[in-house]
Image (cartoon, rainbow, N blue to C red):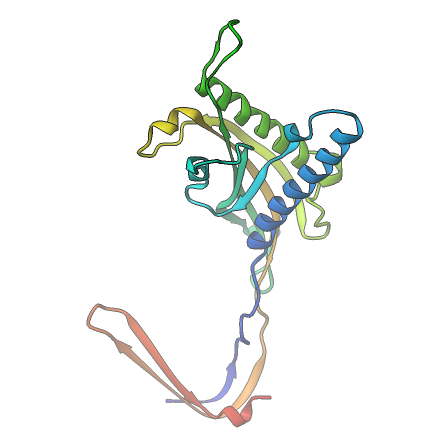
Length: 229
């Protein structure tokens, strides 16, 4: 049993910045796709060449190509990979500098077709071309001067393309031969913030630590709620 002053963490009712930045990357790509389609129409070009479908944190987004009548536009899936923290550029109380990787996976769908007696276009080749077109679009948008800080000045320190690789999605279907994948790994440096100290004087506080049968520690706390604002 304890009594006295306790440092109380207020309700953690927020998202972390890595989540915000993941969603911001997806937003910028979707926004620019719409903008580029409008510009293409103005210049009498094919707007469909600039259409991408953007998702976040999808495990198998390419499976949408298996629909009966699929939208064959390239699919882009943005997901958070990992973070490391630089203590030399952080402090132990409020702010941690995060060095994080966000993967932007692009998927292209190809249709095999006969080119009016002039040859045969293989579906797997067309899929790779569509994937690389999407990768080109993603890299150019995210590395454009307007997006130096991903439009999050004051939060994002920098962004940089770490790598670009092609891969072959795998699932139990012959359609896999018509789908290709490519990944742009984007390194983003930014600040994460943590809750600050808020002290309250409690008249009474009791803490019980209980270990369940599987070893999980369960904490039970009783304190005088009337002491809180």
